[in-house]
Length: 191
Length: 135
Image (tube, rainbow over all chains, first blue to last red):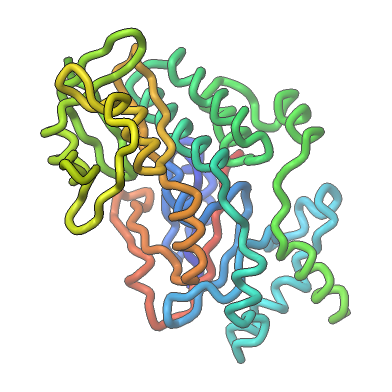
C-alpha cells in the first residue's frame, strides 16, 4: 500500500494529484509533521513499513520513473524490482540493527531548525509574512542541507524552487541518506 | 498579554509578560498546557522531576522564563517575542530514541478532499511511505 505525503501547501500540489488521480491515500502535510516525525530532510524519501508497523528499510531517495535520471544518475527499474521483490517475498527488508544504523540522526541544530520552520509556517498562515520569512531563513541557517526547509520554503517566500535560488542551494549540497549508497550497490549487483 | 505556544499539533495560550526581551509565562497556564509544575524538588510532571539548579533564572515576577523552561525540558524553542508566539520542538535525544524503536510513528493527515487518513489504518499491510513535493 503506497501512502504518499506531500510536504506542500494543498494549492501547490493539487494539480499533480489531480492529474495522477491516485487510488492510494495521497495526503497533504503542509506543517511537515511527517518530516518531523520521521526526520526527513529531502524529497523524494521512501520508507518501507512492514505489516507490524515497523520500519524495515529506512530513508532512501529513489524514483519511480526516469524523468530525472540525467540529473540524479538513479534508474527507476532496479528500484521498482526491489519493491516488487519486497511485496512478493519480503526480501530487501533489513534486519533491525541495519535499519537503525542506516537511519538519519537528528541533532540539536536540526531540531531547532524544525521548531523555527514550524513557527515560520504559523506566522505565514497568520499573514505575518516578514516575521515568517525571518524564521524560514533562520531555520535554513540551522539546517542548511535540509531541503525540506530550504527548498520547501521557497514557494512560501516567493522564490522559484526551480530557479536561481535553487541552483545556489544545489551547489551547497544536500543531506544524503545512508540507504542511497546501499540501494545503489544492491541494484547494481542485480544487473 | 496573551502568548501562543505551538507544541506539535497543539496550540496553547498563556498570559505572559515581556521585559528586556525575556518572556515570562503564567505558571498555571504552563501546567494546564504541558503538565509541568514547579515544586520544591524541581520542575515536575507526574512522577518525573527535573532538578532546577538556577531557580532565579527560571522564576521571576510571578512567571516562568520561557527560554529557561525550554532549556530545562531539553526542548528546542523558536521564539518571536514581537509576534508573541513560540514553537516548542522535540529534542534530538527524544526523536532519536523514538526512531531507534523502529516503530513507524503514526500520523493523521487529510487528502485533497479533506478526508483524514492515518498510517495505523493500514496495519497488517506492507506500507511504502513516500514523502514528495511540488518543489
